[in-house]
Image (cartoon, rainbow, N blue to C red; front, side, top):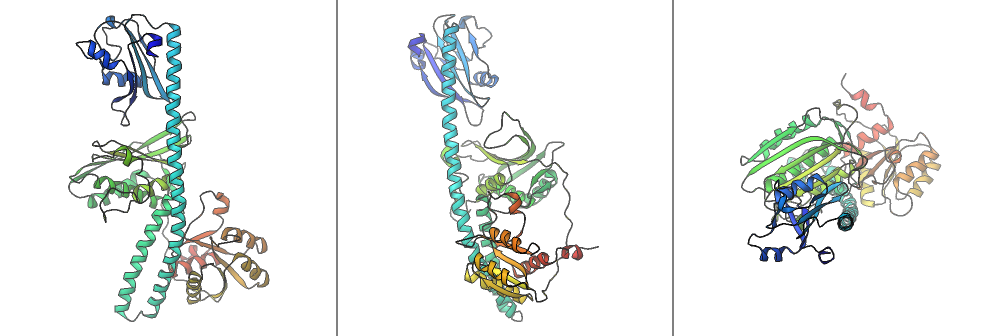
Length: 516
């Protein structure tokens, strides 16, 4: 192109990821121009960055007469120059710069050719970035499916362990030494359940309970806890914009995500530093909508640190589960992946900006709620016992099935247990005394638990149904189907199962238990 247009310098520059400078990606003529001149040719990077941000084509017909320095070029001699912006979905990402030794060199035809070249460069870069984002998304999705399946099997194992320990706990209530050992084992099971919860959050299989959340109040609570946790060497700043809308999210998962991000930030600053948590409004218009964020209003919560930052190859893998640069025993590598999965499942997104040596900024984009946040009314915990009602248990894992049967019998229920949906439907057809269906969602071959529940309602429209799963509701499941039945998460405690069964049999039980 330089020869065709008789130009001495052609350069393609891009704005850096932190948008604080520019970098030359390709050029011709720069070295030759520097060698032929006492004053090396170069760019005024600060001025160039400002010109690129304007997003407009700039033509200077006579560089010698450019006394105002409109063109961000440091060069001796006269000539003419043109700057053509490169845009990515309306956002300036770089520029094509061309310099000629001749004044008024760029006529209409030359500018038209250069604009075509700039458009081709921008389209090529957009395609490469889109391909990289797609490959990254597909890799995360594949890992998510794998981790979700592992979490399901692991939760079944935890259900058996937890259930067996709870049954032993009932038998040894009068032996303090045994009770202490059992309690310790149950705490370990609880930590295992937390680990699978993080895996499910990344895989987007965690069952969320979104509600309108007042973000300033939540951040005050998080700030209070983090000030005791981060240590004296870390300074924490929390800022919220005025008139911040409420966010429609699961408050427990948002709390956990923010704590994880803050702890990651602390670990990136071994000698101390600053962590800034900021909340503001982010509006996405129809033209700016993308695969990351649909058009709409969002609450943006960012966690920024002054730590060591991440190299590009580390940043590319930062959200993969179990990927960590920390030494053994210092982290599970699930903090960012859990936060990413939570944000995506909530209808938002997570974005990371990091430069090696300059810190990291992680931004959560969460959908804004239409209604004001309301405090949940506390419900008194009650111990409920059955009255001999018949419960049909459907579970393909024999060990898990035995635990469910033992729990229900200890709670005062009669229990029938089967291993498949087909056999469950036969029992429901033949036995009118069955008062409730309790089924796992994942049942191996044949119908799954949700399909069984729908078929059972076809046979008996008023039949109470309770589902359980270690894999949660499929993210692709229609909301009407997924929300039609209560779901008990594995591993569950005996009291949780008894309470869930009692609620299914008598939906008004919580209202009667609530304080007056």
